[in-house]
Image (cartoon, rainbow, N blue to C red; front, side):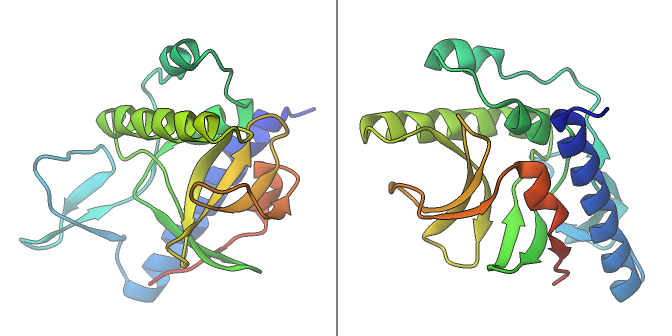
Length: 186
């Protein structure tokens, strides 16, 4: 029997594969990202032109860990979140669901994983200051004020306005949520 963690990893990898396939079918090449020599990634698959590179999601090979921020925050992050953020290096993956358009946030590289950890720390400290249940963001929506987050206690996926209590439950788990997504190729 698969654990929920494997399920999150498998579903995320499958969605990323679908995204790249749909993009490739539409444009006849891999997805593009702006060239930025200060932000390298193993995802880059070569140059398209002077301004853009081809890229694709790749499996994380580095031993990524949240131990440092869990210790600093005196908090254990939900296992699904840890699996989600340590499965793939990728640019944002655009998707749609019954609630609208969204972009899955994933680390672009090990350096970006460090930046992600800093953002998670800031988010958790804000939630604690506001005396709200801890949630961890994993996606942004087409409504710039709303993010998608996972309730750190239950693993449920919610919509929340930044700084506010989550207001709409979307799924019982991250794996369930990812499974219902459709790639939204720009």
